[in-house]
Length: 147
Length: 170
Image (cartoon, rainbow over the protein chains, first blue to last red):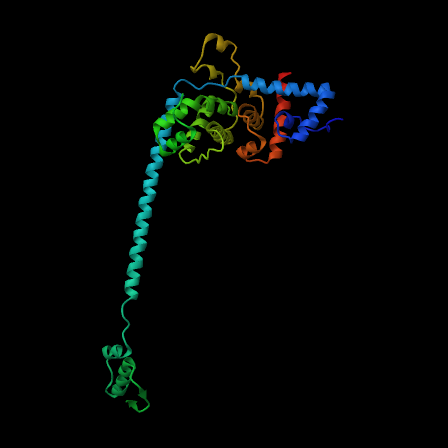
């Protein structure tokens, strides 16, 4: 039994294989000392990486980080306040505009006879005026006039 | 022992609480710098990566499905990548050891090999996967999410990273 030539041992070392696959590879390693040595080397590499100390920052790094973070924090609060003020102004503007528009639309429509009265009628237009009034008052109108 | 849980720390930081940030830095600041240093070209870039990470915490959402340290490392890895993309690669500065560092002693500086030095000859992508896998113990799926690449890419990068390291250490 052997591994495929390009089968990565990394997944085996990292525990990223199914239980069945892990067991299969473990069996292969038992019979393949060279491959087992490779696995051991890779594990040792990981151990060495974990044991190597990390770089340390300069002495005043933490104070700098904290101070700059506070500056960013305060800037974002001011920016948020600015946006909220602008949003409130926009809402107020839209609300006022809507209210004015509705107010204009709500003005009562003049009846035709009222328009005619304002515009003025000719002397011969008396029957017309009567018809307009009758229509407005929902009175029956015939060809001969208002009943 | 800290009185803050991970969730409390993050909630405090998100609120802008300086005490919470001070505690977060006490617990994780050095570690974040160390990780950032392995992934950037200079200590100054590493400091910037940590700074950008802390700023990001003002709006980041910590769901608690990983430890806070894992969450922070994921952000610092991305910030380090952004900084690398913005800047041209630099020669490793000789004055790295000129600035006073925490824990310095004569014997330590004589033979000081830190992880950044160990990994500096590797590509940034190889360093990223080694840091996430070997230091953070992240699984392949989590690494894929952190780096924004498919799982298959993680597997092949990790394999090549280990090969490259083996060649360096021979």
